[in-house]
Each structure stands twice: as structure tokens, then as C-alpha cells.
Image (tube, rainbow, N blue to C red):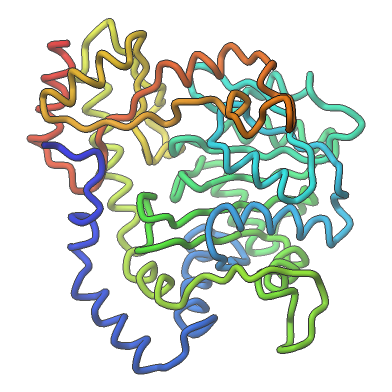
Length: 380
């Protein structure tokens, strides 16, 4: 059986280093916001070419704390509208609601599954104050266009990068480096939220998340908010929460981070094989222009008869997963008794959720396994 994602095999490669880190943390005797968290925050900020990284409990909290941080700074107010892709994982939308903001669902592009910049302008109102961009499946959205729209309309840009560790446009990387070194004069407000859920490209052995930003003021507020709103012990400036990256998970992430680029390259090599070798007119392959803007957290195909194809693959020893079977606006949580979204129509989003299927892809998937997946798909 080819597993969709063999986490045991992925993490077994680091077992010796994990054991050493565990011993070090135990011997140090400091378990919350200690040296490992501080080291990871520095390491991940450097990796992202960003001034600040704040470790938090999970990716959802990272998003919520960004929005709450902007509210504390007066950049957002409760009840403001936030544009968000209609086809994202529901956590993106729940984070907006958790911060007492109003999600405005906007259709994606069918080819990339990411937010369609051309539809953003149509949905901007006097209440629109931010855009939550989701880099779905590991592919960056069209940030050049989205940032331009945001700048023209004085909107905050928040990026849900939970699936996109290491993805970057070359021109963005140059801009980020200038911002980090103080050479750029970019007044636009931005922050990114990351998840280190075990299945991510950079995954912990439990929950974990982080906020990265060049906004020093926002970073300071989030550092307080994640720790009960406290900057000094027993002194609480804000109404905060308890959402701190665990010291042990930070230690494990410090072990895995130096391997992230190499593992992303393996994912891209597998994706390149899939795209060039799968030849079946019943299967729609994902769009990729071979740039660095996709790290293939997931390799997502589309097909008209998903249930049949998924069953066929399983019969042939290939596990697949559906990301995601139900569109957010069709979830029971958003029934007429709550938001009333169930009656809304998002044809592109609904088509995506009915047709997508994720194939196995990971840094431990072998060449023979890739060849087998391709062979079975071509026979379908």
C-alpha cells in the first residue's frame, strides 16, 4: 500500500536528533517560552527573510492573533469586512469570525484554486478593511496583483501560509530582503500565519504555529496576546489568550527546518513527474509554471467521477485524500440558523470541492512509487 502521507517514515529520519533534543529540554528544565522557542523564532524569521517571528499554539491561533493584534492597534475594528477565498479550508474563515470580523467570500480561479484578484474589487465595500489570502495546497496566490489592489484601497493583507512553507516569488523575495534590511519604504500592513501541524511541509510532532511579519508594532502586540496579554509576568496590558509554541515542538522544528528546502525540492520533482507523465483525459492536472511559487504541500487533481477514481486507486494499493469534500459555505455550521450561507452560490468553489482528489506526495515517496501511481492513473 502506498500511503497518502507516511508521517512515521518522514519523522523516523530525525529520530536520533529528536532524542537528543528531548534530552536537552529535560536537562534544561525550562518548558515554556525557553531557548528552543527563541531559537526557532530567530531561525524561522531568517528563513522567511522577515524581521519577526512569534511562535504560537497552532496555525488557527496565528491567524486569530494577527487580526486581534490589528484590532488592538486600531488598524481594524470589530465588524470590519475581510475578503477571503470561498474555497479555503474552513479554519481561515473561522479565524475571521473568532476575531469578530465579517468574512466576505470570493471565488477562486479554477486553474490555480487561489483567490481571483479580478473579483476582489467587485467585493470591496466601505466596510472592507482587509484581505485574507490563502496560499492553498502550497501555491502562492497572485500577490503582486493583490498587494496592488490592497495598496490602492488602503487594505491590510494577511496571508494564510499554513500550506506554503518555503514558497516565494523571486520578486517578492527581493522585496522582502529590502524590507528586512530597512531599504524599502513599504507602508502596507502585512503578516503571515504558518501552521506546523504534523502533516505540513514543516511539521512538528504535535500542534504548533507562528506569525511572521516586518511590522514591529504588530509583533510586539502579538507577543503579548499569545501570553495572556502580558509583557511582564503578572502584568496584563491586553485581554490575551494562552497560545504559545511548545518548547519541545520548537526543538523538533529546529531539527527539521534546515531540511525544508531540500524536501520541498523533492516534492517539486515528484510534481514535475506527475505533470509530465500522467496522460489521461479523465484527469485534470494542477497548474504550475515551474517557478518557486509552489511547494506542493498537496498534489491535487480534478476528475468528474471522483468516487470511482478514488475507489480504483485504493483497489490498486494507492491511498488518496479529498481536500476538501464540502465547501465552507455549505457546511452545517453555516446553516440559516447561523450565518445563512447555505443558500449562497459559488459555482467555481462548488465545482472544485466536488472534483478534487489529492495524490500521494512527500519527501519519502520513492521513484518506484511515483512510477506506480503514474502507471495506475494512466490505465484508468
